[in-house]
Length: 298
Image (cartoon, rainbow, N blue to C red; front, side, top):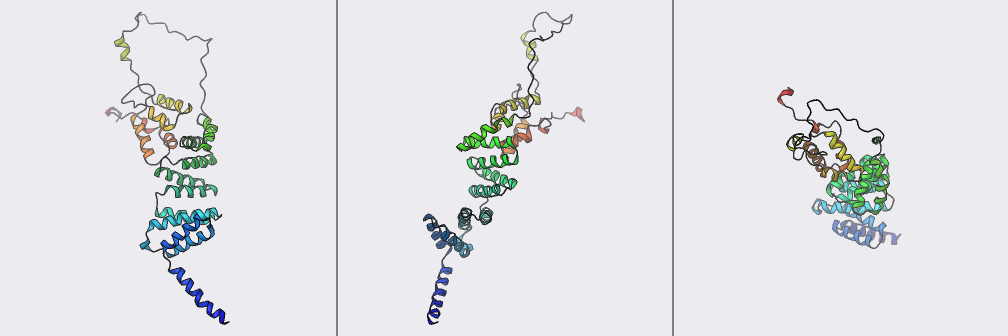
């Protein structure tokens, strides 16, 4: 009984000393324990650090500890706890691309495809060369059944060095052209019919100055056809659009309305993927392709 009475003050003293340790001290201890592969103790030390945190310790340090604890929780199988910690971390650091990707991967594992894709979009908006984010988003799109978007993201991830994405990009590449009708080749047995010239038609070819007058008149269908041929040939959406000249500057076959090219660029600047921007802008009924109104239209 006496021994127990002597131990009680000692335990209280030790407990008080533990609570008195600063946020920085607990965080440093947890990082050291993690380096020593003592994950269980490190997890508890990170929790102690968060319990000890005060406003004066700064939010950046708190976010770092939250993300570190989230990684350990995920490693130990506590996916819900990890998700909560990553969310708390991102709430402090909205542009933490790594935390966004990690949270997206947890959501992807849980089958929450739309929230996962949203996280990967946000991560790529922060770091446009985040290879893993493209690969993960490609996986999410593939599971969602959108193979065209998946193929584009896998292709981009492959370009950025994710070797596993290269095979997936190749496997899903035909999805770009799927559903498009193939043009029937002209029959060699049916020669083109020549139209009889009018009585007053000139027998000689028109002079160069007359031929120049028949300039190309831009057609949006030609723009769409040229872009789709480029994409079907394996080109990236952004690369194919980037090659298209603006019809206002260079009215040649395959040119696209400047308004559509600008709409595509704006969509990219707002964080939309190349594939999504391409699909939303270059449609047969695109408003950006409508000719400008004249006074006669009223």
